[in-house]
Image: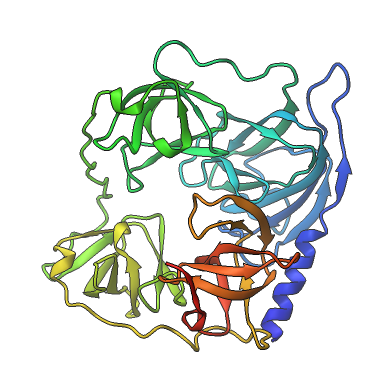
Length: 425
């Protein structure tokens, strides 16, 4: 309960960001913003911030100096947050950082992200539509070595509107922020992001037209999920383009895999869990190119039982492993559904869950295609009344007594969610 109390205090701190009404002057499109700033003496935005203060603008050039006496000149991070009241319209967020930066709008929409692929000195922009009201902006910054600087602005683009699609094959991006990948699948490298209403040129498709090969405005060619494009042609009329999965670039200092069943971690940071599913406890995480030993798998080989370098045995998602064996040749290992690995939470006659995501979407159906009904923020308690057969989605009771669905991966429950009745298959 002490742990829960600390979490609830953290939630209150998050909601205490000042809300101010701001507008551009008649001859200026730049929106003035005040920022709540937190500085950390590590690369991961973890632990209590060493410096907390309010800043009238996000514009810093520290050079090779440390930003504060208790913050190092290299390998530090910072986070800025603001929640202005804005008019409805189209906005452009611009940021220039040395080394890397991530921009999130309204908790879940990541428009710019170079945290793991720095673009020092480049001015990055994202254009998006916002409704009238309060909107949350968060800027995360990481400095490695050398010069350190960051500046950011928000401007309104009144009157510019969205241009029509050209006569050639093209499409609008319909997602708030859509990833551009090097190939037609989630395992391919992320090349960038494009915001809603961006026009992309269509070049080709994969076999089943679930991915489209596109060229984005800066000239980069890559692949986007077809479900998030609004094209002016039938995608099945585009030529089929075959892309082989690229060989991974393994650094010279990484040793080869042993002769026994093993794999490299291919994700930037991959979690180790106590069982084969997102509802199991996180035991730790391993960085890219870590060698893990393979000891088993679940029935469909989507999760692999591994032993990591420090000797811990747990489970990793198979899609993020590069193994030296066919995973289906590993022995099937069964794991009981966890029912006692969660911290103490308040309980009553109904199951209670706690939101662990920064902002969790409530949908009308247990699927990402379901209509968005609203959002709940981190540490919000939820009343759980049902689940789908797989236990990947949970039905909740909302404040108005209506029901909705949330992803089980982002809900912490003191009880076994598989004891809930199956509402949907």
